[in-house]
Length: 293
Ligand SMILES: [Zn+2]
Image 1 (spheres, helix red, strand yellow):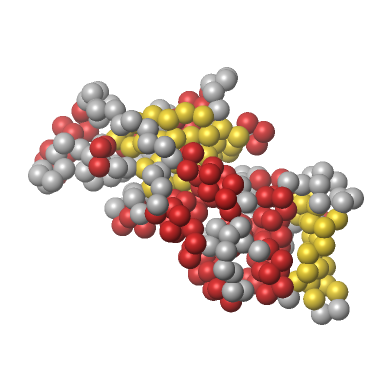
Image 2 (tube, rainbow, N blue to C red):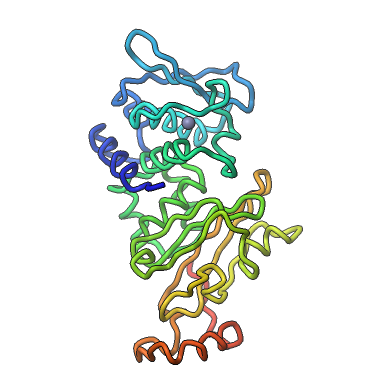
């Protein structure tokens, strides 16, 4: 599944709506998609919303009992179906919270609608500047989520895409890696994280899944924990993870910075030294990076 054309369509759509500030004006985006938002208060708790045609327009009904951030995402997900012309795969026509939150067996069209929605909520023209001005941390993601009235999950995925540094965002569910987004720098470094695989042993996410009490943690771990093929010149990575117990999901922010660079970096030691460097992984006492907030 290639997200790139969808992201480009979302950027074009936001620009065509003439959005000039954040949090993004959802009513304005709906109008641009020839849609009207109807807040409904008698939907079941699990129902997020649905769309129906009326007098040549689309009416997007949204559950008024849900938190504002969830309502905004629901409306944008429905707008995505309209703009991308992708028929909905929702159960019985209604979009439920599980449709939005469960990643396990989600159809690819639904994933693309979420990508579109997240890009509209956190538009590149604004968000890339804000991401460029902060150090990578889960705290930064949370702060931006509040500022843009978006979920931590959407914000984290767009954060990694927009980061200048080598950075990835991973969503795991029931112990399986289900979604990965990566910054341009990381893609260029060929830093690849497999998905639909079990959360790797030794990762912060795995520790949170197995632990009983902690819901957040940070550590510096061997780079090949997440990147099975390793990443050239980087032996260690930073991972900060957040457990969403309600959904049995874990969000990981994974990044590299200069303080985590291999001592051999710059000397370009060649392939011959690689096994030695690998052996040192994990036992080398690495100078700890103070957490920057
Ligand atoms: Zn959908």
